[in-house]
Amino acid sequence: MATEQDILDGLKQVEDPDLHRDIVSLGFVQDIKIDGGNVSFRIVLTTPACPVKAELKAQAEEIVSGLPGVSNVDVDMDAEVRVNQPMGSAKPVEGVRNIIAVASNKGGVGKTTVSVNLAVALAKQGARVGLLDADVTGPNVPIMMGFEAGFMAEGDRGLTTEEKYGVRLVSLGFVLPRLSPVAWRGPMVGTAVRQLIHDIKWGELDYLLIDLPPGTSDASMSMAQEAPISGVVIVSTPADVAWEDAGKAVAMFDKLNIPVFGVIENMSYFVCPNCDEHHDIFGHGGGRKAAEELGLEFLGEIPLDQATREGADNGVPITQSDPESSQAQAFLRVAEQVAARCSTLQFATAGVE
Ligand SMILES: Nc1ncnc2c1ncn2[C@@H]1O[C@H](COP(=O)(O)OP(=O)(O)O)[C@@H](O)[C@H]1O
Ligand SMILES: [Mg+2]
Image 1 (cartoon, rainbow, N blue to C red):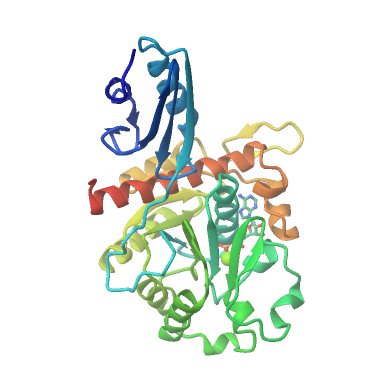
Image 2 (image 1 turned 180 degrees about the vertical axis):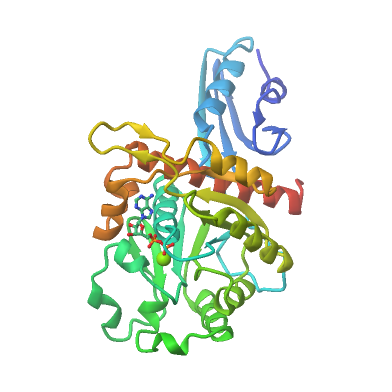
């Protein structure tokens, strides 16, 4: 009859594809119980948004079922997102495991659309997710998350989060409604955002996404410096010279010692609303190639799609209204990539005990 050690030895064949190590030495296999021919255990991954969760489970089941005397295997897939200690001097935020900043070189590339959909996609996978709207140049997260235009101006809401579609949301517009945009210059933004990040009771969060102001202005820079960011994702489009700019943004984040997880190509291809067909208007694979040439990781592509735009404009992100659609699945795949970057970064900086 198989022993606990036999089970662990067998499961050493199962490798985490992102961390390139077996799930036993990573400490993922827990609570092994053997009761006659019945074996159960948990596999605790580093993110609930693991793209190969089902494959890992099937592999583990198959291996353990093949051990002598085992008649039934029950694998419980679980996840525990680890804390990413930020690199710079910024103070960690209590309860928040990872802060992911969403940046772009200019407005209108879909930074907010991507932010809200990534947040909702991660929440749907079971992660505890927050979203901070720090884009003072256009704080439109509330609109895309279904808050009415008047919401921001209603009284003093204090430093609380608003829960929507499973995401804990804060907008600069919620908490500081009366300051005119003119007042939002440079370091002030950084200071306000630092206060927000630390004073708000986020509770326990696996991922806090921040919708940064576009560009490399003072505002976005001071913002980035003040927040203990785990990594930045840059949103770009194929239609402009954005790739050169993306390279510039990366150089700047490098200078601030903030890891860049990679680039998301938005409005990458067109999904025809009538025939559901996939049109590569910009040619296929251009974004990936451009990213590679610049030495950037390519985190995936999001289609140019009418339902995505309508969802954003109507306050119900496509990942919420139609999570099974191919467009929502595109956001989910990118979200999984981003989550994987958080896990690998954590293991790279902290090592594995
Ligand atoms: N993938 C997409 N498909 C269709 N429309 C999009 C897509 N991404 C963004 N948009 C639309 O483009 C406009 C700008 O997007 P937004 O997210 O506000 O950009 P940013 O935050 O970079 O300024 C919005 O009207 C939005 O609905
Ligand atoms: Mg925006």
